[in-house]
Length: 188
Image 1 (cartoon, rainbow, N blue to C red):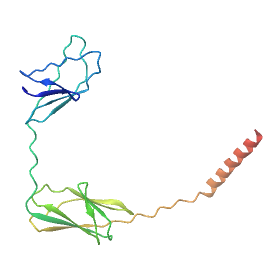
Image 2 (cartoon, helix red, strand yellow):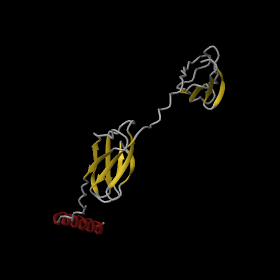
Image 3 (cartoon, rainbow, N blue to C red):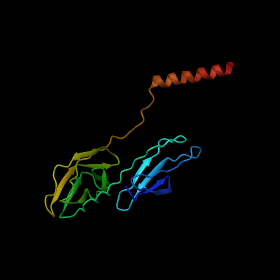
Image 4 (cartoon, rainbow, N blue to C red):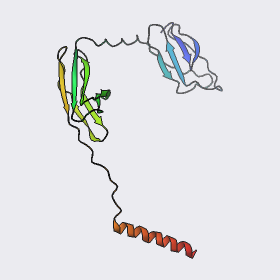
């Protein structure tokens, strides 16, 4: 694109004219690893320099400049709510589509959503001491402003973990091995 600036590494090399720009490089110098082409009103093109031309050789690099992507439309409109009810009191973390929304208080967390926004697909609730995490599909959405959709979660407490005692036969074998090591060490 005519008028676009060319950089190798962070070093400005010049401006493209008639769709082409030549950059001389020394074959004995440190090779460039990246290049970029930029022009006001266009998204910058970034590229890698994967090889270096030999003496007298020309190596082509191509760049396409596109107008920048339009920013996403702002979310707005009517506000609805999800009320996540959990069977344990406080401290459960609530996520919608892997995005943490908060922690329950007195077994409930309300999450604000826009009724015109992209709907969530899943919600997950976790709490230390309760396994596994609870995950479910979101199959109901606030349809109009002010509407609340209730979601109910039943967490199961994890069984306490205990170290199993060493079996008597295994303890005897361990003592026998320790004794053999001790006796063998004294003979040497």
